[in-house]
Image 1 (cartoon, rainbow, N blue to C red):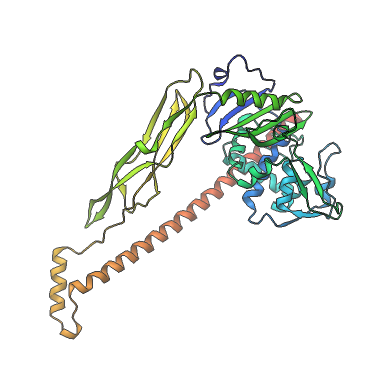
Image 2: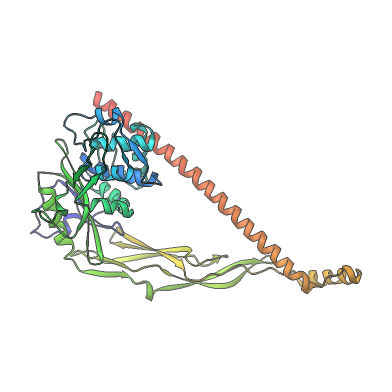
Length: 446
């Protein structure tokens, strides 16, 4: 588990009411401030960030039609927030995502789950597997809505991780940045259905408006109190702020206070790609001996710049680059890493990639082989003879073809192995999640 500096970074003028808080650099995942960020909390509707992420990852066409079932609408408790759909209403998945994220429609969450996985239970299992893949080790959901349920919990840190992945999707950012939206006419709403965003940080006319906030997701239940996870930007830098279990209105004021402080910190360049590079010999087996055939010039793809909190330990790094590389090497191949730490805390890593291409050299026969070939050829009739010089291009083409074929087979085999390993990991994670659920249920009975 990552060691976090926590309150050490916040000055005395910042007073927070949220019980659990994480402020994360959106690019690197570096935590700039935390308070009780690994404590288990009820999520409420910030759960829907993961619901939206799974939908976006599993849907190729957002214009697919989604039809609301009886169960998706009528299985909800009376207090649950709704968009207002009726069984049989049909909208697109794209519109449904707005209904999910803006007014926090639980009927829409159920309908999306059924549309993607066939039923809500399988969709929730998919959610939990995806959360585990993202590193959200202390998160478990029992529904796609965030409504109270036995064994459901998350942490401020886990929700920041999930948000960090969700904002990689431009459509997600477009949706959470929208103050409102009009859903197309349905059977129950023939004039269309206008919806509004419950996130008061993005409404320009409201008292909590913060122009640095791109968007986010709110939540509330009696057990969870108010929750909010936000994505914000100022200049070149972006942050994710996760605040859980706060009184009414405090999620907005706490988020603004945290942004004010973190965005005021000086930004320093930790890694400058233009000024750092490494030269690594590229080797090839030629006639039974490893031979250097070129030099790969390796560098980072982009700079690493971060806000630096007060009294932060000095940043140091570990370099992971091989002494040699096997051919072929192509532009953009990741061949190493430079990993940065502040004290014992992981900050970020930079991928080191090749900036040039070095292909295998054609392997020619030895001198003795050449003499034998020439002798045999000259002993044949003139009409059937070929010189070495006419044979060599053919040999080269055959060798290149064989190398390409072997490389393609290797890549196919690697993809198959990766797919099998991924499936095995998913099965193990699902089995572990089922075990945890059984354990929680047993403890609850006791």
